[in-house]
Length: 167
Image 1 (cartoon, one colour):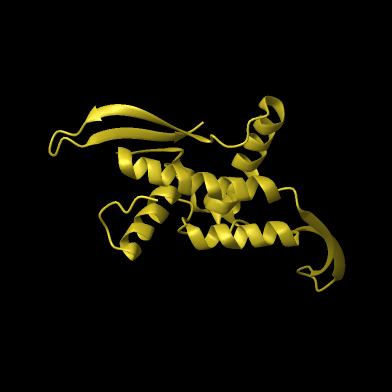
Image 2 (cartoon, rainbow, N blue to C red; image 1 turned 135 degrees about the horizontal axis):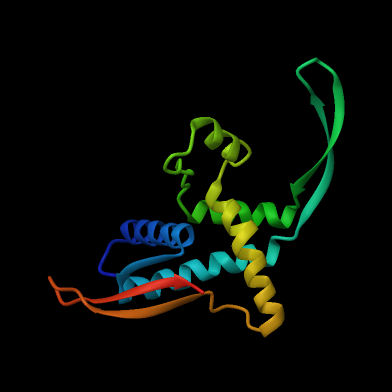
C-alpha cells in the first residue's frame, strides 16, 4: 500500500472516508494515487460482503402490539458469517445517515428509514453484494468491482485527476 505522504492515522482516515464516499455515491473524483489505494481498500470490503451476504437465519421473536397482545413473529437475522463480515466492514467505513430528499415530507422520510440503522451497510449487502455475486456467476469474474477513468491534470498543482466508480 502506498503511503500517500501522510502519517498512518491520517492515511487510514483518508482511505476510510474516500471508500465510504465511493460506496455511498458510486463514484468520486480524486488523484490517481489516492484512487489506486481506495480501489484496493473498497474491493476488499465488497468481497467480504459478497462472500457472506446470503448467510441469514430465521428466528421467532416475541412481539407485543399496542393492545398488549403478545404474539410470535418470524424474523430474518444475520447468520454468524454475515454478522462477522458486517462488523468488519463497519469498522472500516464511516457511518453515513440517510438524507431527506427534496420535497419529501418528514413523515414519508421517517416511514422510509424507520428500520434502517446503517444505510451504507444495507446498500452494500442488499444492492452491491447480490449484483456482483450474480456477475461473478455469469461472467466467472470475481473482483474488478471498480474502474478508474483519467480526467486530465488539475490546474493548480498539475496532479493527475481520475474518476473512480463502481462498475
